[in-house]
Image 1 (cartoon, one colour):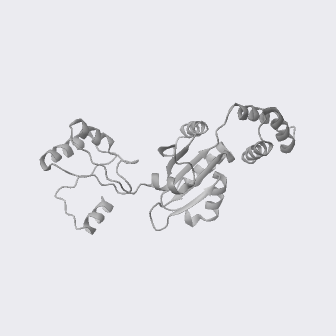
Image 2 (tube, rainbow, N blue to C red):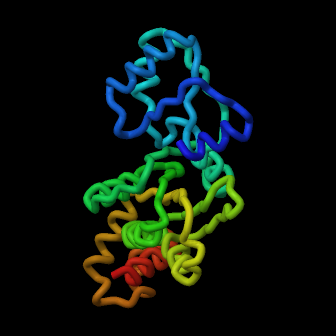
Image 3 (tube, rainbow, N blue to C red):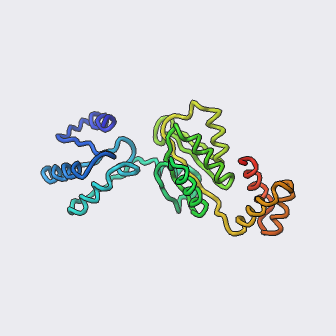
Length: 242
């Protein structure tokens, strides 16, 4: 409530009733809000940061209000999801937002597998404590197939954007640890893998210990008809992460 109260005070708004709704709120808390709304006829939801309900609690409350035929009026406001997408340089015509990057390794691996099949930009939240490890994980799983933009402190005074492969951005942040502060948004566009790439990867796994990357890339290019330079770049990322 601290930031919300600062905003209310700045605009000299003095509501008679302020209720806290968060991840720990229950059906009892929602009923309390609903009963209050029935008495005062109108109210609003404020988020501590960004737009209410975007990776914040509240959808259950909104669902209950809609079921009671209470009118919901959304107001446009700052959201790092859309703001970071606009400035990322990645495709904006097809995107998905998945909240925070999974903490469980199995879930993270499953996400990376799905990214290989998604033809668009994926938007993910991450904390400063995990941003470097997450970039490292993405680099290991996706290599140079992933075009990434990391947005820091969107709409704030220290707003910054870092663009490149996961490894490139990871190395930059390791060299500039003073920048690893605040809130981060990771935006990812992955080059789709078709059956030819699957075949190429299979050949790499079988012959990488017997041929040089240059010779192996040439052979695989002839078999799959994929550009030799693309193959070489892909195999090079594999060898660096092995």
